[in-house]
Length: 279
Image (cartoon, rainbow, N blue to C red; front, side, top):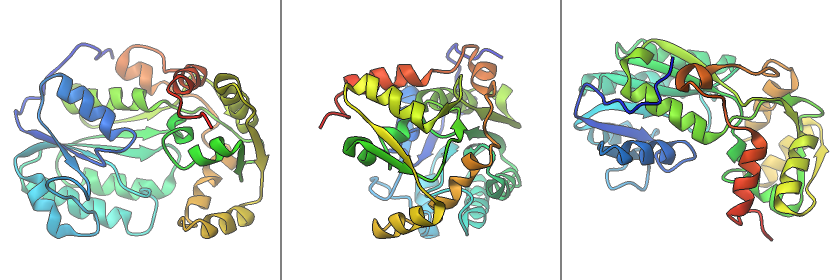
């Protein structure tokens, strides 16, 4: 299925992008805005605030909205996520939204309850399940370790087909604009598997300095998260890498966009050119 040509939604309403300042949300916003389509950023700092923990903010954020890109922080598998997703999805439909696109995690059994809760809303839905983002090393929690020159993670020699946030944004945009994606679940990965030694080597070559990878145990990593004030549940997400459930490539990007996914090496070169990894 090739949807690279611009398509327009059947409704002229606004698209609400929850987490619209995040890695994928801001990219989707750019793509919709480039087509002259109205968007609303759903975040705590937005002109019309959206806060997951404060349902009283939802109605105003949904006013005049016909479609929603749904992302949930910190993760769909965390306690309370499915209940929040279900309640929000029902509220969105009641306010007139007809299309919901959910960002989920590939291989996350705990996220399936959230997916089902969104599907039960009665909206036209699409689920986008993604592998780990390449941009985690430049726009998220792994940037600081890269800058420090050492990735310390509880993943041993496990391998992951990292997917680029630009590919995710292209797929999400297609799902928001094209009826052919209604009722579909897409799994997205990059084109090849890398272990974290190889990731460190790719970033080192692109950045022009040495980055190393040091494996640690899960409990040691939990202690590190606690020290930095990060929810320890994040350590559980690494289990999705360790058990090999996602150690394969999938064709979701090509299926939706009619082209192969972006390679990690291309991401590393382009990211290094921005200077974000300079110290």
